[in-house]
Image (cartoon, rainbow, N blue to C red; front, side, top):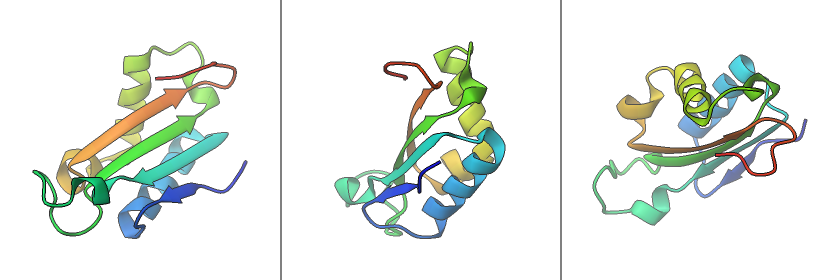
Length: 102
């Protein structure tokens, strides 16, 4: 397992996302990308610098699971973060061996 990749400004929300996903889904690969700077001044920008994220995650937990169910699993692991503390969360979830996950 490699270290998480944080791109852009990082802080407590990015770290919490990483910790929650590692605990719940035991990923073999995890990138937490802070896209907030790309949305500065747009709808949903609360000025915190932690409003928009992309998660790229690979986990054996996703084997045989549909794309929709994978996204639901990620959202469930994150609890109130999506929608309450983060305005936008893009999820790219795949199982090991998937060429390109979604």
